[in-house]
Image 1: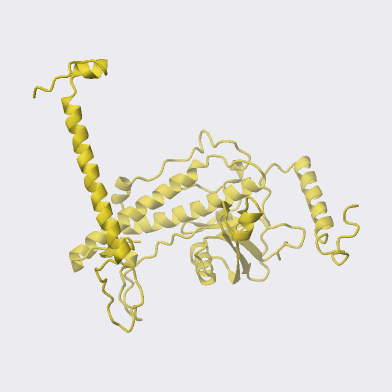
Image 2: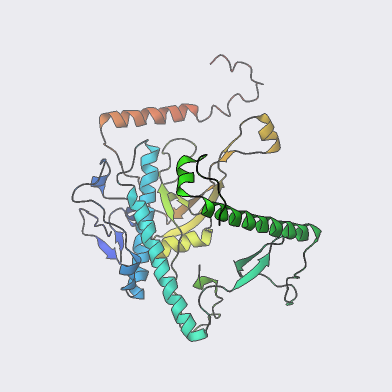
Length: 212
Length: 159
């Protein structure tokens, strides 16, 4: 996905940043030859995104560099998209944006995996924030990731596991409803078991005997 | 997301940098108009940036990633247009559709910096004529909102 910039002057490269006669702004533009194209074919056809498996083979330095290459590519594509839209034209190969996003997501995934592994080995806790059980206003409990927050006078806040009237009634009624649903499902299954092939074929017909 | 949520040890001078930054911000360069009240000085470049970026973020981003000679950064947030279905909705602020909010950055480079937006589409007679027409219309219209605004609408029906 690394594109080469064609320039009349010899480009001075600063890593992957190109410095030519237009200065750093050149990085926000695609090849001049691509501007009037409907679709970039066949030589300039863009490649596919990096997969997570391919990125797992790469070192952290390589991933760091690839991240910034993708970042600049994304900025360039966004600039181009807005320029084309402003002239009521369509950008050639808009799937390039999705592919860059996919690559960046894959890099994040691999980096997170490595962080998790290293921290779990060194500290015992992984990289993911701890999970807390939260009770909603209607009494339902769900897991939520802990986030940084300011504490009140350094005192810890604990959740009081008591439900108010409405929440308590809600939970009782919900449990009752779920119970009824289970019973109905069981009844439905029993009914289906009792049905013979003939009954299914002829619907209203079939022998109505209940010899178990 | 994941490891970033852990509070790292406070860095002190001399300590090694144990973390590498993978910024997720995006910036798209925009072409400002060459004529009219919204034209910009030659050393100014207009960007549309991620809403979460601050002026410091924008400066650092351009200086470190692109090596740009940034002098100052000014930001502007534009609220997205809201489409109201009727007057009642407008009164009670019941919006059906709203366009996304946008943040623009006006980045002033060192004096002497001059970036001219390249001609992206065929530079032929027709395109140049259309652009000249647009510029002329912009020059003619730019004061129409402000001129004669103290006449209470008299004479507006007759152009």
